[in-house]
Structures are given as C-alpha cells and as structure tokens.
Length: 102
Image 1: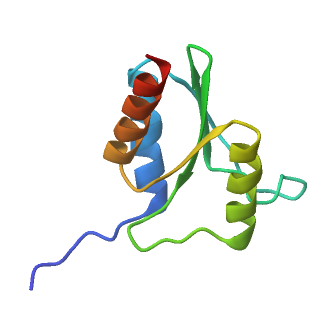
Image 2: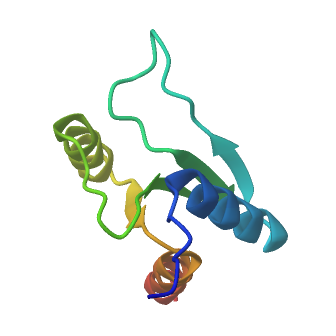
C-alpha cells in the first residue's frame, strides 16, 4: 500500500488563499484567539463588492456548532458563506456568484 500524504486543513487553506489572491481577490485569514468571534470563518475574501466567508475543511472535517451558527447568521443577513474542501469548491462558488449577478 502506497503511503499517502496526510491532508492538512492548513495546506488546503493556503492553496485556496493563494488561488484567490492570484485571481484578484483581497483575502484575510482569521485566527481564532481569545476575544475572536466564535465560529468565525477561516478566510474572508472580497472582489468587486462581493464578500465571501470561507470555512476550510478537510474531506472528513465537519463544522462545529459555533461555525454552523455563524454561517446561519451570516447568510440570514445576506452574506455568502461556503465550506471549501478544495480550490474547486471555491471556483464553483465564484461561478455561482457570477451567474446570480448576471
């Protein structure tokens, strides 16, 4: 059996961040620290007035209750929130935003 490279959320996050920056998005990575908003998404990206909140997970990763609550609050107020496990998930979300805008 071949050794598989472990999938790390930090690697996925860095790849997504780099992709977004390369395609013209301004990206901020949020660090959860004392005093942070509980459940805040990992990345926030903005381009052309569109703001995305991106929670990055591995294939097996699941959102916590606090993250689900943040997603609910964000989307109820009209925000765009995605759970991304790959750059492809982000590409699909951006394509969806473009369709909605046209």
